Length: 133
Image (cartoon, rainbow, N blue to C red; front, side, top):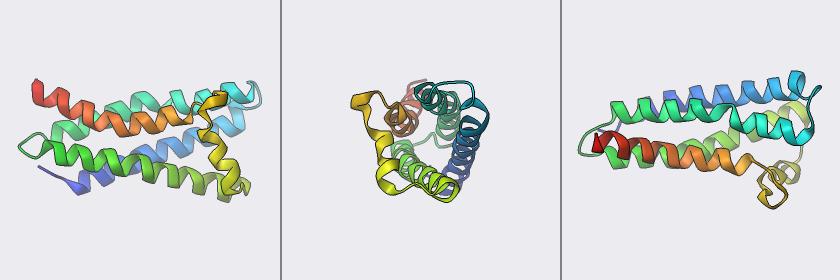
């Protein structure tokens, strides 16, 4: 069963965690670690939370249309989280879009694409896990 309200609620929880984690990483953690370590912190800390939200979503959307529900979350969560994260850095630090897009430069070791990949894959993999169980 597709539950858009549940998908939206879980996304708000994810977006809030990502923004708060970015704020902590930019203020307290940045003073003690290197820039690369802070970027990894900002990506690795939300990952277990994203997986947990994906399993909560999968548990509540099990049924004949589980794939549509998982696909809805898999398509909405990454795009909207990137948008909220962009708004955070734009409003807080006044960064331009080009410097925000530098976060996606995986060829120099930027970890941000890992978060986007997990936001996309977690709802689908959690749905598959719940269906096969």
